[in-house]
Image 1 (cartoon, rainbow over the protein chains, first blue to last red):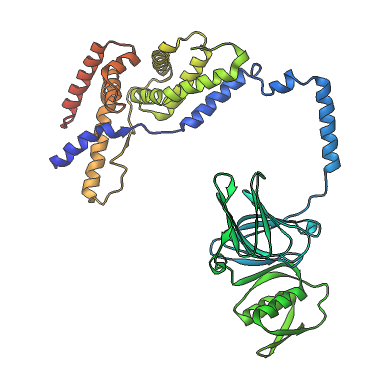
Image 2: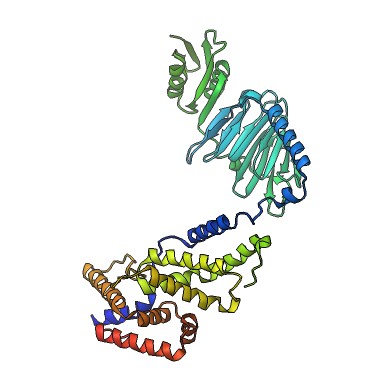
Length: 285
Length: 173
């Protein structure tokens, strides 16, 4: 017992004063009081007061107000898709370009503007299979990828930005536009800390795209396109009635035929019949 | 301090922030050693700095530390009148979850309470000197400067603190 007590006596020095509010909060409180009392002497916008005359200021604000009115457009709604950890998704964009999102990835695009501008904002990792057409731009916080029609993988997480080109050509540019490079089929590039890209080099396609998902994901996609994707995936032929003007939103697995058929037919209020291994009939209920 | 008038208020605030960063913690500790009440200690520390701000044109940089301690002591005297105080120090040992036996933990808690009670009942002047030395690790000369007393006085208070400690606990410090 004495041993324990002797040990503890040394620890008298190890006491520390408890904390009720943090030092930062204490400072904020003091600072607020100081600024209240000295409010009339502290100038927040010295530039405005000293340099710009009232007349110019008035003119400037009028221009500003006019600009706001003229450029105010109806709010366009962006479509966003966020995957959580452990799940991957395929998305078909309105032009039936395909995007496969890896886990913990966020993607945004504007469907209404899609026909004019194919721009996607990406944070995470995704594989793109772009249908030929207008310029297709992937924006990330470190840089942009621009293509016409090709397939490529983009990884943009924290401080890494890597692009792998599977087919066609891809041009890559850093956000500050200081560095850019062009990738040919089978090439890979990485953004380095020193504001430049690594030299394009060959990569192993299986390794880069190995995360590709087991699920197809559709947003407001023409039903006929969904079916053709399904046919391709399961190597079957689907016969159906007229499905013009019908659209599908949802997802189905790539490796479970019956589950996939249920996930397609139930929300569409349809029925399916498996005729044989390679033929399926879908019709309205 | 080299404060000028309102024309460079932002610069003044920056200088003042440095002063705050340097001395805030030790003023809070000092108040706590006197009062045993952390909320009061923090309130008073804030008040101390506001007073220094108000008088920034009259305080010399070399005397600011002593000034802070003097204002703090005075504010506490006006603000806080209580006969008995109790401490709630955080003990680095007591807060570590260990695999020790319940008996050991219980004994540790009792011990913790005992030393905190002895500290609380110790005469204030002796306690402050004792804790500034034992917790903040200040040498006598630094304590003397902060409290604006002589080194001899610090030695005397320290001696009183130790003999109080020894008569109220069985443990040597």
